[in-house]
Length: 148
Image 1: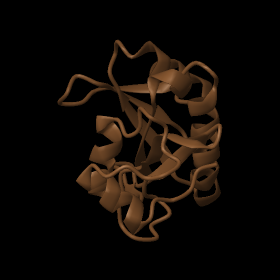
Image 2: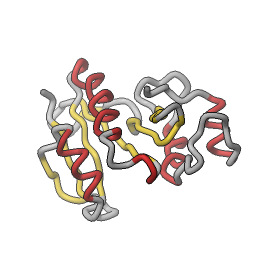
Image 3: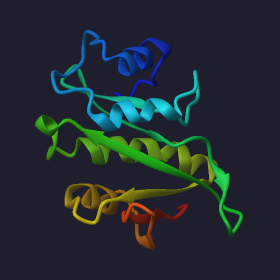
Image 4: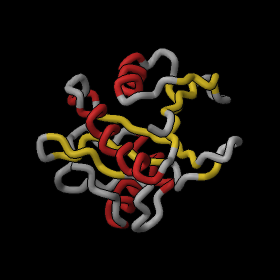
């Protein structure tokens, strides 16, 4: 289940308030950082990743698609889970679900991943991210999933 964030969720994340239904290790710093790209009812915005009935991570796009240099609409995705639920294929399933929205609209997707984050690199590879564009200013690999 990947419910879109609402104002109450974002307010709690920003203020440090805990909401019922959150995993004890949620939110991670990256989840709080994702509130910066949140806009009410934006389907491209952050969503909760629910595992065993608890919010245990987030996934979302960093805003709506914009044309890349070659004119193809493109968007960046970010995702992450609390450590206790990793290694179960959850991030891969959440990413694949999110990519169906992009596929229907002809949007190419990129992800910036630290080169030492082997788990995230595996998730991206399983989801069809096949091209490495180089690195960004933070030294992360910029991986791209072509439009199918």
